[in-house]
Image (cartoon, rainbow, N blue to C red; front, side, top):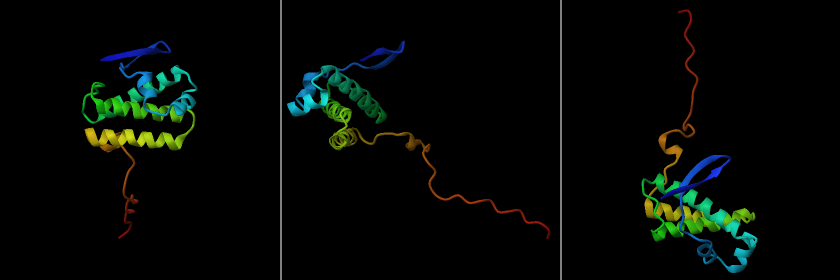
Length: 138
């Protein structure tokens, strides 16, 4: 189901989430949660919101449907939300581990994630050479 929000007067459509802050709190140590969220549930809600957007896009790029009733999708969203929390406070080493966990789970469960490079739109590979100069005279 799609919901959304207004940003600068423009409605941004996105999937609504059934994942709660309490779900996120269960994923990490209580001290880590308080540190990463500054004990502010709005920070945790923002992390969940960003995670849903990221996971929705990645799952859809595999050609599969996004459904939070699927336990694997819920786990992926929660891993990505933990990434968002640690990233928010600048703890990139812990954040990267969670980001990789989420990406690996998507690829093992749904298959490869499509990117713009899959369509041949990425950087050129190989070598380029100048055309042969024209022959004059003879």
